[in-house]
Amino acid sequence: MSAVEIGNASAHCDVRRQEMREPEEVVAMLRLHRLGWGSKRIAAQLGCSRNTVKRYLRIGGWRASRMPTRPHQLAGLEAWLAERFERHRGNADVVRQELIAEHGLAVSLRTVERAVKPLRQQLRAQALATVRFETPPGAQLQIDFGERTVIIAGERERVYLFVATLGYSRRVHVRVFRHERQASWFAGMESAFAAFGGVAAEVLLDNARALVVHHDPVTREVQFNERLLAFAKHWQFVPRACAPYRARTKGKDERGVGYVKRNAVAGRAFESFAALEATLGCARSRTFGSMARPVKHPRSGLRARKQRS
Image 1 (cartoon, helix red, strand yellow):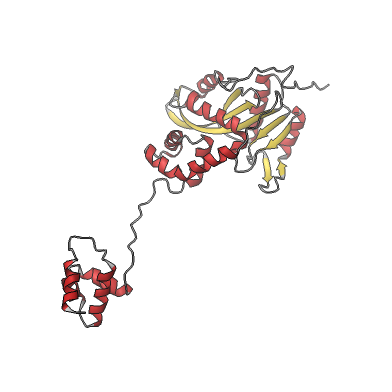
Image 2: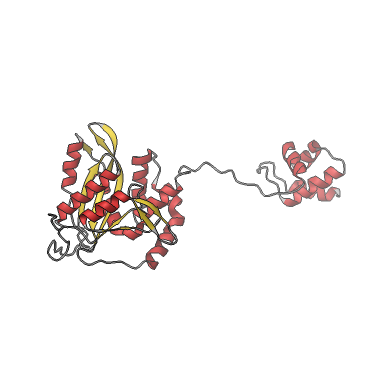
């Protein structure tokens, strides 16, 4: 390399720049090193640090620098975010509130929106591809549980909200439990049958372990829990499990769960568990305004269970 070339490289080298060098400067470092120059002399000639020269000599050429990555605030919660984002139909602010309530993680709305940005396009595509499924009166009851942390007697406590929604009228029945065991599912369904005055022909439920032993997502073969089958035979309804990993299958009840969590208990404190139950009693058998249809039960809707002798 001539003195002119070296001088030109030095002229374009600004000591105030970051230690990432241009490819031609790295070529100059390697050529000078082959001519017997030391790293200190090369650094002085090119106007950069000696460590920078050593690094490029060690790797043997120019490489693009990689920006340091900061640990993501929501790392490890990708699956939870995807499920909640779909459950709340793309409402990132509700997801942010549930992050605080369930994980104690306070982040900005912008942080949540960045995290769910890839999911939003996917949700829009699903909405375009999904055909609204309607059922006649008395044909289907959708049931599900939702979790919520509330203040009871001054203490934070996690409660489990059972929500049953009639497929035709969207009437909602709510019960609150301290756990989500099989007994709670059965008690919630019996309470809904009593509140609605009859039994739907079909009950669409989640793939909870307490109810479903196995559900193949490909063949859609379902193995129900034996006690659930006995319970369904007693009450004379057909159990049906929603498609695995597709909460939209029972979207009417998903909306009901979200409604109860946001409107009935969110941001409220209760003196006792009984007070919480009394509050939710006001939310039972509620109908969503614009989606409501006249309910004709039990005569021309829900089927009253036959009395056994």
